[in-house]
Length: 210
Image (cartoon, rainbow, N blue to C red):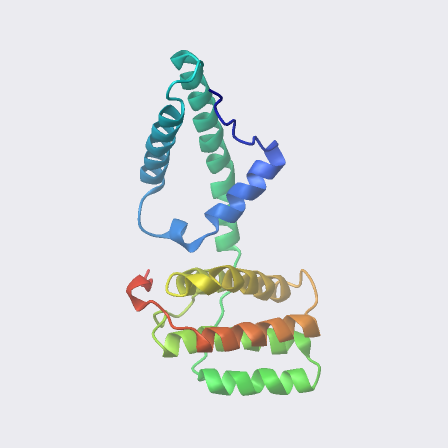
């Protein structure tokens, strides 16, 4: 009987996979890092040995394989976590001393779009998304919230839009920091996401108040 051998990515691919996985909102709340690692190791070993039932591979070989994979995962996490923390620290504040309603911000975004001021249109559109989530109690109202934090917090009660919210937050930060110019396509994408958030039915039991 053969044991299925897992696909082993190269170092760069593994790093990218880990960044994408650890960007998920679930990793920024709840269970601790050590708890998640311990649980993952336990589950992995249980699956490994259950799949090895009747196999000819010695137990020592299985243990060696398990140790190598676990050490690799822990090493990747140690490399990736500082990258994610740095991304959070560098995220821009979305609404500092801004008491406008979501509808008012949307009008400002539309006016900027009419003038083809794509930078302001995109930034205001993201602010409208955040203000709208606050008004609907999808996320709590909090001064000084960064774009990343808004996307993370909104992704918990809106899991179907979590990835899109994170992508929008990265666009917001890139434009805020001048890493690239805003485009009409960015504005259209933000508007589309805003409509999706408005139409979505949030699971408020998963709302983050951190």
